[in-house]
Image (cartoon, helix red, strand yellow):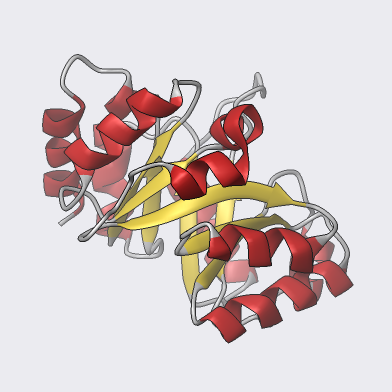
Length: 207
């Protein structure tokens, strides 16, 4: 199982500093949508991330103009890019083709889509399917139960990531369950006094 750490709502300098500290400690470092909107892909391309050990994901949340955004994202040194499941099937097919051409990865963000839509887009074998509980939602989120139901409904989907306020206890339960390939953690690592130590605790929890 992989640990993906999401860096959001910080300055670009702080994001660079955090990625250097977490490089090699975690599997994937995510630069969140807020960073991309604040600074843009040109700034991210020029920033000295220079990761050698961890992959880097840009949370583009592409909805349209997929080919353009994905080509720009991979040109800006991303290893993984995200597309929203609610976008058109044409968009998802096109960004999948771009991803395959670049020999990279894409994550389909399943935020607020129903099972009919998931079924429609379930055939992208190399894609990561991200179960994502909205940060704005007032509802509680049981990641283990959600993963269990998802796997029963879509047994053919191979790569699954999960995000939504996951703490150490939940991380351990998800790892024991054995369905998700990646857990995504944000504030419970990057907003702590010692993000590196917190990340190590999560890594220990999921191994």
